[in-house]
Amino acid sequence: MSQFKLHDVRLFCVPNCFFAVVLFSAGALAAAQEQSGSAKAVSKGETNDQPNMEIRKVGFVVHGGAGTIERSEMTPEREREYRAGLEHALTAGYEILKRAGSSLDATEAAVRVLEDDPHFNAGKGSVFTNVGTNEMDAAIMDGKALRAGAVASLKHIKNPVSLARLVMERSGHVMMDGEGAEAFAKENGIQLLTDQKYFFTKQRWEALQKVKSAEKSGGGAGGKKYIITDQDRHGTVGAVALDQNGNLAAATSTGGTTNKRAGRVGDSPVIGSGTYANNATCAVSATGDGEYFIRATVAHEVSALMEYRGMSLKEAAQSVLDKVAKLGGSGGLIAIDRQGNIALPFNTSGMYRGYVDPNGKFVVEIYK
Image (cartoon, rainbow, N blue to C red; front, side, top):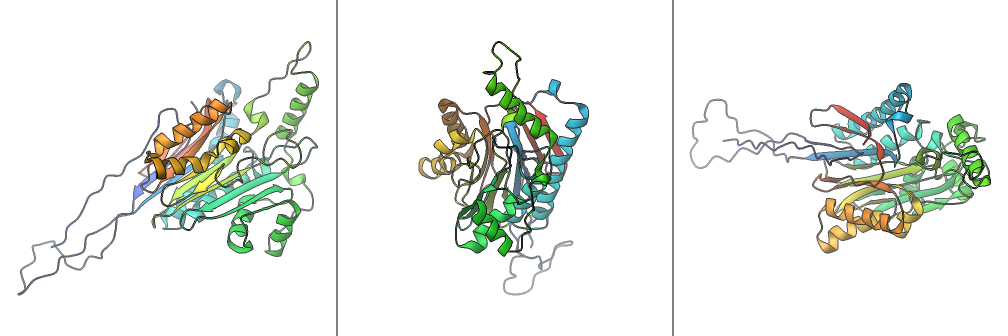
């Protein structure tokens, strides 16, 4: 006689979180018990030919950067644009997981969408360096085999996260940067932009001028005051996922910080700092003040606390972010473990985030 198990579908929510998750079960049926000895009558409505399948969960979390995000400073039109961007990223990743696709494919697809959206500091919307150029970093990691790929200081690549994946899968290396990374991209069929006009956005250019003016005036002392927001200074996009095969993945991409020195590399492409995934523990994508996240080895530290101290994902993530705060850094991280539990700590007042609930509904949030 067939037996059916009903498993709860749970949505994990953390108060004041600014990230998102989708967690659901992909239907399962227990195998029919073998009949013994002589044939026995089968009750009405029962069958003995159901396939043997496991309950499989998938989880998906995305972020568009942490910082001071106030409703009073956001126009209704701009808010709609941010929400639409997050929804597009959710769609890209969720559709892949829903079709039993891989966590690597889901995270890459979601991050590519955010890289193509000028509202977010990655790809098209990247901030400017102190010499008026755009330099982008990205990373992706496969938790199944601890494979990873990262790129830094890119100037002519539309989607750095996809080049990071190529580095992981085809180069024999983990990290490549600058001209060498772009030459590798060209060898593997990625088209390089002839100049950086594609990355120019008025908002990012004006932010650079604002920061430079504030520097010259000593932050506005005795003269005009310049209000420098987190959105003027930095930002990151990222995704973490758990697929139906139980594999975890993480991907992160950024344009860095406004007015950074040319050649500066933040935490996003540093495996174990801004990006990490391990099937035995969790997948992590971080966002915030990169120098502090590097010093605290944030992403790997979450995994290590789980593996060696037996902490839960939530405990480990909060502990590591507290460490960042003690150093003087701000930001947040998204993480998901192999059971589909999530952790969403942050020490800023806002975060662009979205998730898909158990019913397949998209939920997008911006403010605290």
